[in-house]
Length: 146
Image (tube, rainbow, N blue to C red):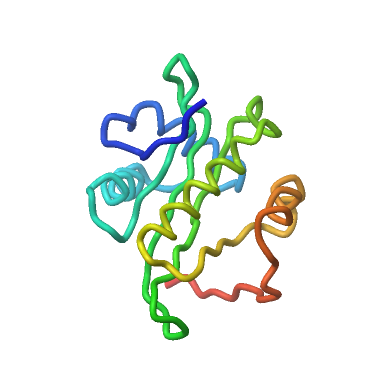
């Protein structure tokens, strides 16, 4: 397995992983929004991007997406780890940790002061990993869909 940057050539292999992520969270996103998001992540801008976990045979087994943004609390940007998904048969293999570490490396290299993310309170398997690689902030998310 290698961890590498998400590229425009990955769309066909990335799409089923993205759909698996959405299904896990019982969500659906319109195809045009999916395409816009993918294009943003692979457009070589510095605000959004992603990494993939690739098997020796070239199959994609996991994805992670990130968004960089300024903060009122620090000089450097924050890096929001927005989406992390590993196929069922790859879970527990260290792939999720490797994808998170790739985001950490990217954040350090681009001068970010913090990486953070959210997960659902019922995602206990993921939280077992998260408790090993980060600290819980204690904050709760509130939102209003507009």
